[in-house]
Image (cartoon, rainbow, N blue to C red):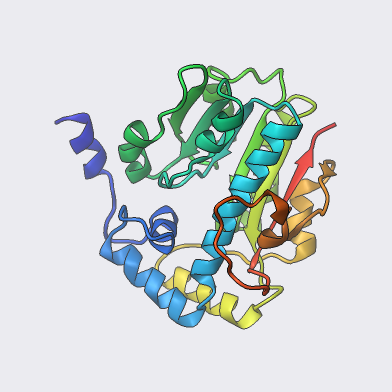
Length: 270
């Protein structure tokens, strides 16, 4: 059995997977009918779901541009990267800093199947993929340390990931473990779903995910802010992702003035 066949045999096409549903929201092709059905169910209940996915993607791009252009950070650890969708984080970072080192982490075999072909970086930099689960932070850190210098600042990205982990499953403790292992000057970039803006639509979306066997948590502004405890937040703090430094937008399409149901922010470790 080849490596590709082995990976394909581990892809569960009977249940939706968040990375593949997100790919469907973004217009990608690396998803299955079960993912498309859930995506369609959610957009029928919440027409803003695709808009939120696009805004979240743009939030990643904006934060990466700011970090590379203004902080000198050249190391990125992106956990829950999802199916590669251009431009990827490493492409944004390496446009400005060709020597940037980017390590992606995800636990879906379909992401692994596409990682080698799509995550190609500059000759000067490093672009690698680790197959691991966020519930294994020590494993992630140990493997990342082979590629990144954890004694120097690292930008940790948890983009649209933590709303798939309930408080009872140790969501805050996982983030704390990861941040604690990083050097001073490192930062956390995080976005997470909220029910503050459209509570009824979000509730319906959570129920649709639950019927598909996927845990989804909508957190308040204060609850998302808790992920940044002990860190120095970059202005404007924790805000709807579309409102985070819109002046950094490049190539984004207008989506209206309404907030999207995702909070995001960037916080630095002293």
